Image 1: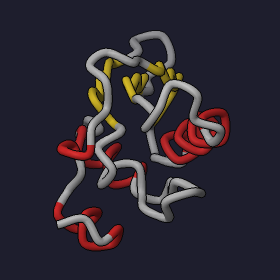
Image 2: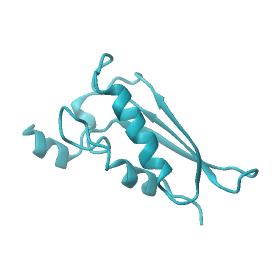
Image 3: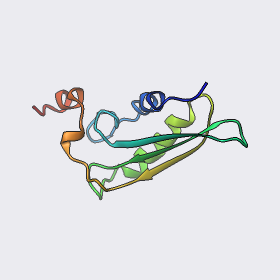
Length: 106
């Protein structure tokens, strides 16, 4: 059974920004999720494009590592690639209503 993008995004909700205490999906840091069958391994490779709230985000390496680990826990995942992109730049407009509520942004 193919791995759905929603499954990957749900797994990434366990990755919490250590400064804001909100998961990276609700913060709007995940831009793109690509799932590709790997004919050699029989697994599915997952690639994500994610950003940071700022280019010099001190939590960046931790968020990348935790994202990789969260995706690897999904059954059937082969290779995982986490790409950090800065275009388009992140803005608070990308956050979900839940994230805005948690941070007191109205």
